Image 1 (spheres, rainbow, N blue to C red):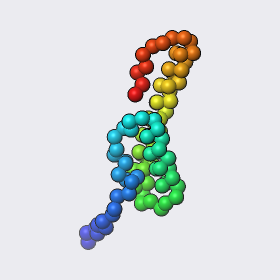
Image 2 (spheres, helix red, strand yellow; image 1 turned 60 degrees about the horizontal axis):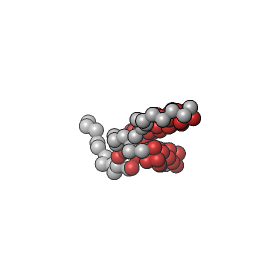
Image 3 (cartoon, rainbow, N blue to C red; image 1 turned 180 degrees about the vertical axis):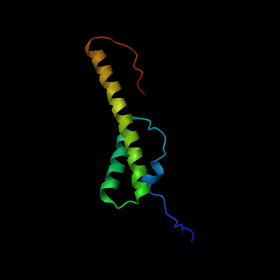
Image 4 (cartoon, rainbow, N blue to C red; image 1 turned 30 degrees about the vertical axis):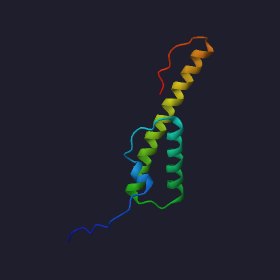
Length: 88
């Protein structure tokens, strides 16, 4: 007996699982909030849930890095040092 394949429609969380890095913090946060909401409020297939979780982890890492960059820049400004900011 062979496996039967059932066609499935991709939902936004499945489509974003392999998406590129967001262009800014706000975009990443919006996408992360959308993923969390979808995961909390829907019965997602296991594979889609895993893809959403992976994408969420990527977005969280991006947001944390951006916040850390901004925090470092604020510390420099508080010390009166004006240095070029390498943030995106």
